[in-house]
Amino acid sequence: MPKESTNKPTIYDVADRAGVAISTVSRVLNDSRDVSDQTRKSVRAAIEELQFRPSRTAKSLAQQSSRTIAVAVPTFTTPFHNELLKGVRSRLSDVDIDLLLCDLKWAAPEDTLMNFLGRGAMDGLLVAGLPVDAAIGEELVQLGVPVILIGSRWDELDSFYWDEETGVRLAVEHLINRGHKRIGMITTHLESALRDARIRGYKQTLAQAGLETRDEWIAVGRTEKHAGFSEESGYEAMQDLLAADPPITAVFASSDVQAIGAWQAIRHAGMEVPDDFALVGYDDIKVSRFIGLSSIAQNMHEVGERTADRLLYRINNPGKIDAFRSELVESELIVRKSS
Image (cartoon, rainbow, N blue to C red; front, side):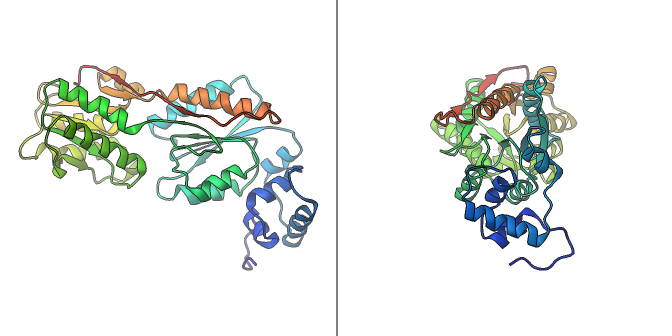
């Protein structure tokens, strides 16, 4: 039984009182047929007992007065995620659907997502950059609306994902083919499957070429903003790489924004790209095309469009049974003057 509180009761309080999952409460609020009469009665009793009032969004959806798609991403302020959101928005521009944004936050994305799901119902959900485990996967499956994953996979959901190790291999092999033998890497301090996969791809590619790898050639900046995917972090990490002994001649950065910061650190040290250092980033954000930064393109705008199309298809065909699809998005090396 939930603790007494001066705060307004939440969908979590209702779920606790009724002894059901929050997804079940959501289905009751939206008059879904996929709930037994006894369960519906228990949830309604809990709602009345707690005097719970669902959010405006949940009410309007229950009345079918509007439709809402939610997009959950770790942040809205990085160029990488901006491209994704632009792609989604371009597909929704001619559709009468509201777009709801959820900032997952880098530090505790799982908790943030669960809290978000408890605030009200939606017609569909896009989730980007969130590793899915059994608990989250089951919650998303039981949500009762179409869900599309971006950057991760789950058997019972549609998804679009990348092979991170292959993307890194393209970047490092390019530097090796340009004659570089001592290649550094800039990564992030935040432990994640993405970070580990990119470090693994970097080390494996060098090892397969018979080249040396050293721990001090893998650098991390001190700035924690955006989980280390920032210009400041790249600048700081490059300062450490500039002091490497023996010196490196090329750098692979785990994101374009880190590479841009590294480029500035190289210039401040009185050196130039690519004369003194070759540099390759990851993501191929828009600004990279204008400054001549070589990068691994993940085609986020296109991915945003494709995921929105898939979600709209699922929403508009609720009774159609199609197999869930996991689609590998091919990464592409874009070579420019920096390398």
